[in-house]
Image 1: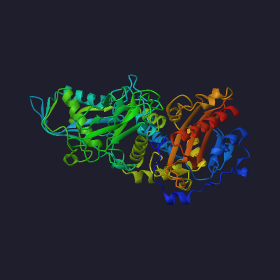
Image 2 (image 1 turned 60 degrees about the vertical axis):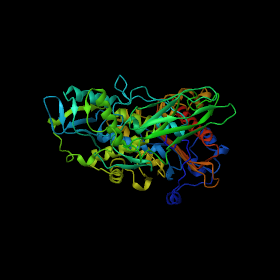
Image 3 (image 1 turned 90 degrees about the horizontal axis):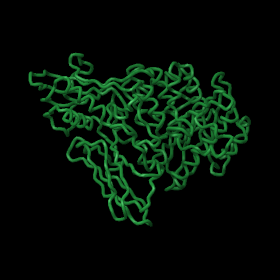
Image 4 (image 1 turned 180 degrees about the vertical axis):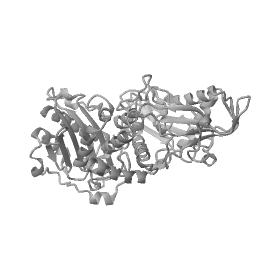
Length: 551
């Protein structure tokens, strides 16, 4: 799912919209859809889809023969289905078993008392989780409702591991290296790639703490009383205060964040104080959908990741018994860094080794982690040809898609690595990518990274197909990436327009036949916002289950 999933985005691209090669007439061209079964057409021709456009292609995974085809050459909105390109290329270049290593180096010398007269430098590696989602078995912890979607979706389920675990582990290693005091600064070397603009929210870097989020969790209270709350990570870099309270049963829920996504923490991280505030009220008996239970979760965006990580690391060092003379709160001093790549092994005092890279890819695809996908594109660019900017990585990707998968640049329009904004492609391009991955060494990890119908990831709640006993067996037999793109409806201000709801992946059919499929529906009015998008999501699940049954 897009981070904008179930949330109206107020921006449109007139140029991209004008050049989109899809029909919005609402009828299905019979000359292109004669092979599509009636049971699927009946879903596509529901009244809610009048004026919308569907695209579908289903092929045999082994032979590539086309089984069903509808508008497969049309350029359509695919949203987060774009991630199948990003993550596939990354697995091919980096490898499922690769483990990122984040080292810590010292500059200067350590005297007989254990005092380092110099700086400690943590060199960011692009590790998406920094140990903050590490399960005991070494996998990355995921939940059905990820905190990256909390504000747009309405709630989330937080993963269990300590989001500061990696920083604590590094600090303990520094202490074990007989450093008792740092008479200098703590610096994050974030020069792995050039910081990029993440969806007009902040400049993203290769260092992460809790996915660059501060989680606020509320529990229930009685009428007229404030809701008890807690937040994580706990750090002086950002603190949280709240006046959110419980109102009468007849009151409406109103939860306000200050600063919100448009004002962010950009101007205060690295200064004192930097405070996020929550206000408003919820009625007695409030049920925080879609989780349908408390705690209620909201998040604040960490918009200066390097400065935030610096403070977090200083605090971890203090907990490990290492005294740091530098002020914990401050702007990350990149100007004091030595030449890039000049560190020697003799200077290294600690390192954090990430989970196998397949776990990062699984994280990105299962919960549709947008910031992670954009970072993945940069990591692929570095591995492929040392590209260090988003634009350079996108350019290199064009060459890769054409040479490796025979996908022409005319078949898609990508603006980032995650499927933001006016991201389009045709069905043939998506199918070419996904079928091309079948022969790659890490295909098993790639397929496993996709959400499973009715089981996990962003397809956990898509279970409407189970109401039909003949389709219930499809549960767990469809591994597919979801994508959602919602904007304000220009024809009816104040309401939503589902520009694209897409689904693409693999089906182990009832017969055992292996299928590759892509579908999307574009331009569906969603006056009720959240309540109107969910049925579309379920309809695509119904179509996927029908494909399982028919083949």
